[in-house]
Length: 365
Image (cartoon, rainbow, N blue to C red):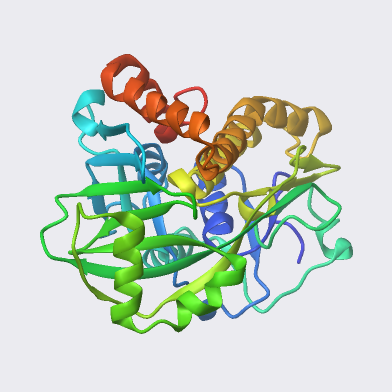
């Protein structure tokens, strides 16, 4: 397992984050090897749906994988709260963009990244577990799989699960995404093909009952939670996973760096997690491409400082949305409505929020 060159980076994890990092490093002149514990074919069996910002699309274009993807565009995002006044509509045209974002199955993106990794000649070692002895041969080890380990960072259990499925609607979705905040948790609808991908938040104690509902009962629940702006007509089988916040305040260590879910796992509200991870990956590749020693403490420290504002901003923004919209306290409910109304009436504020969601805390790039 000897490294090819002095700048070689060991990437532990051959999923989307690990493969994206390997491609970004190659673009910046840095050699990398990927180590994946699973069989390579198993990695693409990912049932998630990803919401990519336009900033993420730009990165995937630079990596050479975007043109072959069949993603559904998000041209507008409707944001509202159930049982309260105030709503806003974020439009791509207001930002002089064609689209605010894109939606696609995670398996499609993984397949495109895998093909690009193979075409680039990047070493991908499947069914390979690595320990400290192996990674010590490399000047830097990037961990791009798994979650933040207990004791390695900050953690918060939201007491919620996300129930995932796709639904058909009576009228065309017109490429509008919906974020509906309720006292039970947010409901997100993302246009995917001619259907909507659904992320329905449920309390831990109710998720088993929700998953057990037949299609008719589930559609009735979704309709009650979402409201009457859309009429749901059919639903796919449901899956669920627990929601929590996990993040490493410092994503670097001695010749180590953590990326993707290994650095931070966020609530899916506002779709910030994977997009933040891609920004981390691109900026790390830029930093390492300019370095003589990719694992040097000053190189990693500079990268961590440069990502601090964006990482903390995305984490705080997501956490604030969950707390701010969870309470049924009437004064807070009115304050939320006033905030949504302000977004709707003040185009500069609306543009700032939209750019924050698309490009990160510093409206990057």
